[in-house]
Length: 304
Length: 330
Image 1 (cartoon, rainbow over the protein chains, first blue to last red):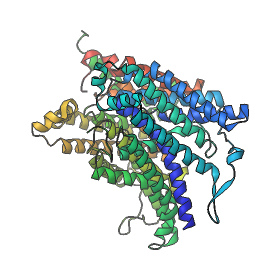
Image 2: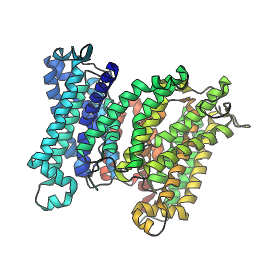
Image 3: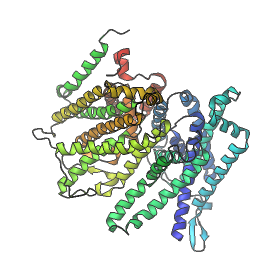
Image 4: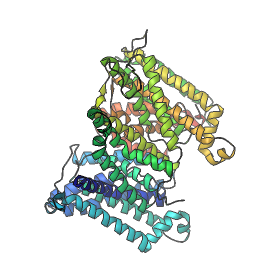
C-alpha cells in the first residue's frame, strides 16, 4: 500500500513534467497548426542554463529563473528567425526544418558545454524527505515538482480562461483567419504563445536537472513522450494535455513497478522479468493505440 | 527549358557510377570506398521505400527506422539462434535459427511488412500532424522493446555471428556483397517504377492531392494507403536485413527515431516524389557524413543549417536540380 502510494506520487511527478512539455507543444499546434520537434531543445537548453547559473551563483532558484529566461529567449529567436516562415507551410517542411534545428541546437550545446553529462545537486532546502503518511517518507524535491507543475496548470487555466490574452488564444485556436480579420495582431499572438511554450519547456528542463543526467540529446526522449501525451489528450487542448500527461506518467510508472512482478504469477520468473520489462517499456504506446482506436482525435480534441 | 534528355543523361550517369563503384574504389586504391558505397546503396533502398509513401502518397511517416531496424533484428536473431542451436522463443513450435539468406531475408521482409500492417492500420485512421506523431511514437515503442530485450543484448545490441549465406556467392567478399545490395536496390526501384506508373500509383498520387475526392470517386483510399504503407515497410525491412549483414551487428540504434529522421532527410535532399531522388539523397548524405566528419566532429551542425536552408529556400532536391524540370516520376 505504501509502495503503491509512492509509485503514484512518482507517476504524478513524471506526469507533471510531461505536462510542462506538452502544454507548449499543444498550444503551438492548436494556434499555429505547427509541429515543432525542436521543443525538446528548449528543455535541454533550460537544463544546461540551470546548471550554469546554479554553479555560478550557488542558488538553484536563480538557476530556474535563468533556465526559463534562456529557453524563452532562444525560443523567441528561433520563432522569429526560422519558424515564422513555416506556419503556412506543409507539415513535412515543419518536421524537416525543426529536425534541422535539433541538430543545430545539439551541436551548439555540445560545443559550449562539451559532450560530457553534467549533474546538478538537489537544493539543500528540498533535499530531505517529507512524511506523507506516518512511516512513509517521500523526497521533498519530487513533491515540490508536483506542486510546481500543478501551480503552472492553474496559472495556464487562469491565463486562458480568465484574461484577454487567453481569450485571443482560445479564439486563435478555433479560427485563425477570423481573429486576424477582427484586427488582432496575429503575429504578436504567435510569438507570445511560442515564447510561453518555450519558457515552460525550459522550466521543465531546470526542474528535471537534479533528477537526471544533463546531456546533449536529453530533450528528445521527453519530446516523444510529450507527443504521446498530446495524441492521447487531443491536439490543441491544454486540459487534454494535463489529463494525458498524468495518465501517461501513471501508466508508465505503474507498468515498470508492477508488470514484471505481476507476470510472475503466470510464467516463470526469468521470463516474467524479461517480458514484464518489455511490456512496461511499451505500455504507454499501447495506451496510445487503444485511445486511438476508441477516439482517433484524442480524448479532448480542440478542433472538431 | 532544358534540352531533352537531360534527365536521361543524369540517370544513366548515376547508374553507370553505381555499377562501376567497386572498380573505381579499386582504381583509386581505396577499397574502403566499396564499403561506403554499399552503405549508400542500402540506405538508398530504405529511402526509396519511404519515398514511395512520402513522395507519392503524401504520407509523412516519421517511423521508417522501425522497419529498417526490425529487418535487421530478424536477420540477427535468426543468425543468433542458428549459431547457438537453440529454438526461437515466442514462436509457436520449434523453429531453429538460420543464416540462409533465402530464409532470413524473406523473413525480415515479412516481419517488417507485418509490423507495417499493424502500425499502418492504426496510424492511417488519422491524418496530418497526428499521423506524423503516431508513426514516430510506434517506432519509438519498438525501439524501447528491443532496448529491454536483454536476451538479444538490450542496449548493447547483438553481434552477427556470421553473414547470411547465398549458395554460390561469397558474401564476405566486399565487391560481391556490394553487387547483391545493388541488385536488391535496383529490383525494388523497378518494382516501385511499375507500381507508381500503374493504376495503384495514380490512386496514391490522387490521394496525396485530395483524398476526399478520391473517396468520392469510389476508391477505397484507406486500403490503397495501407497497401502502400506495407510495401514501404517491406522495402525498409530488406534494407535492414542488408545493413545487418554489412555491419555484422544489429542494435537499437538502427531504429532510433533520429534514424527515421535521417532516412527522411535523404529523401528530401535527393528530391521526393521521384524514384532516383532518394538514391542521390542517400549518396549525398553519407558522402557528406564521411568527408565532413573527418574535419569536424560537429558536422551535424552544418547538416542542420543546410537542412533548414533547403526547406526554406530550395525544395526540389539534388536530383531535381541536376535533372531539371523533367525530373518527375522516375
